[in-house]
Structure formats: C-alpha cells, structure tokens
Image 1 (spheres, helix red, strand yellow):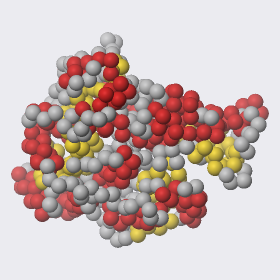
Image 2 (image 1 turned 120 degrees about the vertical axis):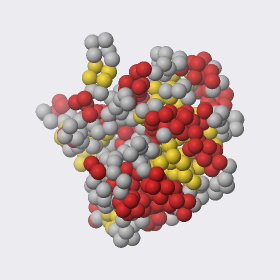
Image 3 (image 1 turned 180 degrees about the vertical axis):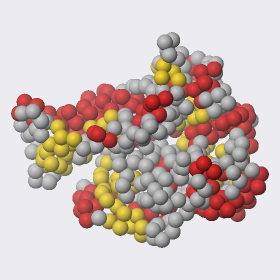
Image 4 (image 1 turned 45 degrees about the horizontal axis):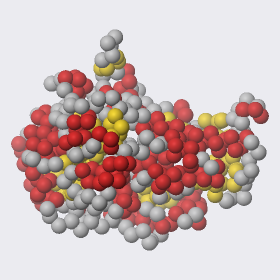
Length: 555
C-alpha cells in the first residue's frame, strides 16, 4: 500500500468553493487561501445564527500506544462514510502542531484513504493560525518585559512572571532560559522559558472564544504576573489585549477543507490534550452543527484526557450537548496494554487481549458515566483474527456499548459504513448529558472527582508547592472554574508505565495555575511538561522536498 502522502498526492480534490456550495455557504462568506483552503467569516455566522443545530458526535479513544489507534483517521473516515449512506455531516478537527509533525507523528491529518486535504499544507503552515497564536502570545511577553525596562510602573515582581514565550516546535533547550542579559540597555534579567504553542493559554482562549469581542475580553483577563506586594497583574493592565486580538483577527475564523472523498471538514485550533484542553474551537464545532445534520468532532488522546475536557470544559462553556460518543481502539493496542511486546502484536494472543481489554472497558464506562450513548470502533488491521474481534465485540456488548469494525484506512468511506450506521442509531437514543462534577464545589473536590471517577485513582496527593498555588488560585476567584488536568496520555494514572486498567494508585499534583482568560484551572500532575522534546530520530529526518516542490516523508 502507498504511504499516506503518496495517497494524498494522487487525490483529485475539488475547489474549496465547491465544498462550500455543498453546504450552502456563499462565496462572500469565505476568505480563500488558494484553491483548496478557505476561512469562514462572520457573515456566515450571522446568517446561520438561528438555524437548527444538528447532532454532535464526539470521537475519542483508548490510551495511545506505540501500536497506534487511528482516532483522526476514524473521524475523517466516519465523515466520508456518512456521505456514503446519504447523511449530511461535517467533520470538525484540530489543526496539527509542527512539534509532533517533525517529532514523533510525522503528520496528523488522518491516514490511508481517510485523510484530510491538502495534507502537506495542513501539516505544515496551513493558513497561519499557529503562527498568529505564537505571535500574539510573544507580543504579550515582549510588552511585559518592556514594561519592566521602562520603569515598571505596575511594580511587577520579575521573579513572579507567569506568562511564558511559546514556539510551535518541540525544543527542550528552551524550557528554562534567562532573558535580559547584556547590560541595562538589553532589559531586566530574569528567568524565563518557552512552552509549545498548543499548550499556551492564547491557544485555549482562541478555541473557547465565541467571537472577536469575547476573544479580546479573554485575552485581557490573562494573569501574567504578580506585583512586589503580591497583587495580580493581567494582560489588560499592560494594555496588550487590543494588539493581540488584531494579530488573531484572521486566526479566529475557522478553516474549510475536505477529505479525500470530498466530504467537508472544518479544521480549527489545536491544543494538546495532555497539557491543555485538547479540542478544536467552539466556533468550528458550533458552525458545523449549523451547517449539517451531524457534526463529527474529536478530542485528543484517550477519553481520560481529551474527552473528559471536551465534556467538562468545552461543552459546559459553550452549552454543547453530545448525542453520541465513539471510542476508537485497535486489537493491537489492547494486546500491548495486556503485556504483548511491540514486535509481536501481529500474532494472535488471546491472553494478552483478555488482560489488556480492561483499558477499553474503563474508557467505555467513563463515557457512559456522562449519560451519552457509546459506540466502540475497532480500527481493523489485516493481522486481527476473527477470534480476537469476536471477543472484543462480546466484551463491548457486556459493557452496554455498541460495536463496529472500521476499515476506513484501507477502504475510505466504504470501510466505515457499518460504523456510520451504528452511530446514526446511537444518536437517536436518549442522551442525558451531565458533567462529572458541578462547578459549585471546591477545586480539590473537582480534581478528586476526575481522578477517582475517570482515572480510577484511589486518591490525590498534593506537594507543598501545589497546596500553596491552590490557595492562591482560589483567592483570585479560580475556585468557581472547571479544572484542566495535565497528565500523561499513556496511562490512566500519572505514571506512563502503568498500562491497562491500573488500580490502587494515587495522582500527585505538583502545581496549579490559573488560566483566567481561558476560564479554567490547570492542574499539573506527574512529570508532564509544557514543552516536549524531539525523539532520538525525529520524523523531520525523513521529510524532504524535490526540485519541483513535491514533499515526501510526511506519513
């Protein structure tokens, strides 16, 4: 079989304005970026304001493994399959980050015959949203350091600056740095650092904002530092929010693209789910709901991260109510969770499958606990045996979840028809969506609710630094906000080595930070970092471009 990029390069996409017309979008409601990409402007939002919403379908997964799960592939394929059965659906996805593209993933636009086009553009610069977010964040940092240099009228404590610079690249050398060296003319020396753009509060704000004015308000509310006498300093105190919003005026517009089979996709925003809230923009999701009978969206990593944050943060913030949840898994990944070695996953191994399927069980239970119907999608590989698949189907039935094999990677939309039919049946079932915790309880109780009900932990332990930070956040009014827990994606626990469905473990909270503009409290657990590093052999080593401009190596 051809590689993902070879499949994408042989495809014949239709002009993006034709995709727009399929959805009833007028040309003046788009801002074209070449032939195959367009932004959707406020004229469209205004016209569709009172249109009836379609059904919201969330795609999530088990904990990721080296064997792969195929969540984005399944999402794109499900969108194609909906068209095959005559349903009007729009896929709403996150934008890839350059860090993973050049690091471990090599691309994040689906795979095989279930991809989003133009694949190369999406995985690289796309429409510049990531760069605009990076620029807006770093403008705020520059204005703060300039304030220190120009007399420090606000009496900001250089030792208590909270905002960090960002870069859309995995670069561990920038985690901890010193700025302002070189004498008086070069600024005030202080410790600083970078985070990856997709972990920044500006990214979270863009994805949770309803419109341009809401965006500006939220940007102004960013907590950037404390004064020498301990008072909070916000971005609005530096008068930064106007200029930051100006940089984001195009980035706030969702992007319209298409799948390999010409199904519409709205791609916008891209926060990581292990260190941020992990779902695409509120604007993209709400627009997709107005444009189609079904909006199919995804949340990052497993249901313990992206889906939990989608349901407890995004849905609550935006007033969204999911009609069904799809949990993606592979037979290979379940065997890996059961102790099978990576190089032996092609072999039938019922013992490992029986041990590892508990991970799928936890994710099914987690999603059902929100009162939403669940469908399990097994992303099928050629090496899966009938005995293995029958066991998984039987297990899902016992858990009260529907089941479908997905073959969209190899067959495109045709390989997802069974899944699409199951999802359409699921959305007609009663949905009584309810978040896992109420907002009117203390932060510690919210953290405990997620840790025990979603992760399966026996309790939560706090470091002394975290206890102090928690008190500070509550004193600033953060106690009324939802929690965004930063945790490893590889395990339900905060220890990446604990696979399957671990029990009798505790979650260790090391720090607590107020994302005041985004409207949530970030809770840092384990050894999670907000600036990842590149692996020993980065995917960038395999990416190249020919004399005639053809890119290779993206996979």
